Length: 266
View 1: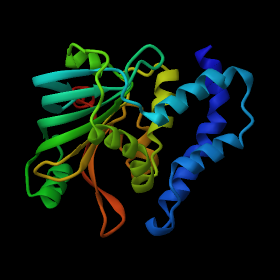
View 2 (view 1 turned 90 degrees about the horizontal axis):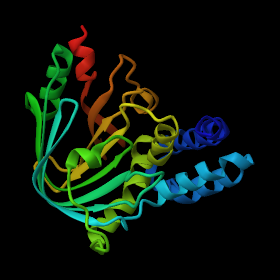
View 3 (view 1 turned 90 degrees about the vertical axis):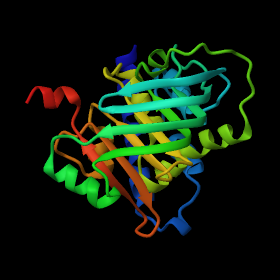
View 4 (view 1 turned 135 degrees about the vertical axis):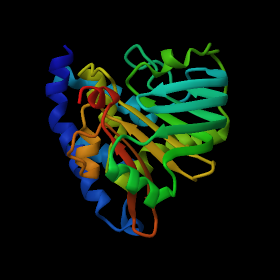
């Protein structure tokens, strides 16, 4: 059934990603709001009957609601590949989609640390961008989207029925349109492909803000889809840190890297 859904949705996702790439090339002041074109673009595609479930899942991923409960994190450490993220505050979760939580918004205090890989180019590039020999930053909020085991790795006790604050709701609703506008990447479509293909390891994205380095993002895409399609990274990079530069209307890649297992394997 999942394979049939993937086949049925491929033309739709390609059309959406193609539109996203066109949007990323337009001047920001003339670009339309992303959500309306996505809806229109998808509505123009005749969908086979067996894609209805996949389409419903995509629409839920686009909405990114936070009605899945809340949990307090007290110095909880999440390790994703070479990245270590520490959280001390409140998480607000997306409800179950296809049996698992796929996103969350965090408000509180946190920090990110990632050592530079054993690469002269990446070390020099990171120093040029940040004047640092590792990615280190505090943050006051974070938005997470994922198809991997992030919720299990956090190990939090989620309490149902909590009403998210307005700040959390706005962070959730703003994430996908902003990344679509700034990078051309359709996060909901990428998550859908990962879920339907049962990718392992899964996809992980985090946006951080209100910290020592301002807004920036981390992407871990072990199938290389976003790094290749939207950042032109074709050396096998699975992860990257980047921040949008409004002066050039493009994202600046701070550091890109292979998976730890790739380095270990030589």
